[in-house]
Length: 76
Image (cartoon, rainbow, N blue to C red; front, top):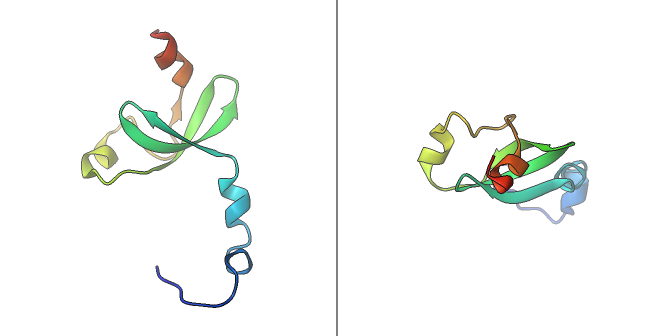
């Protein structure tokens, strides 16, 4: 969507900045994703940031999926 306006973005999309403030960018299994920390040792995938259509077809990586990146780091 393209929106041409002189109105500041935070007035048009007031909650957009609050929502994206707690998101973290990371590479998970070779896919660039935005995640939100759920607390403890897990993260929830918020969105996939990729131009490769195959990344969107991966059944294990989708918005809403809960991942444990600490297992991947520790090799467990």
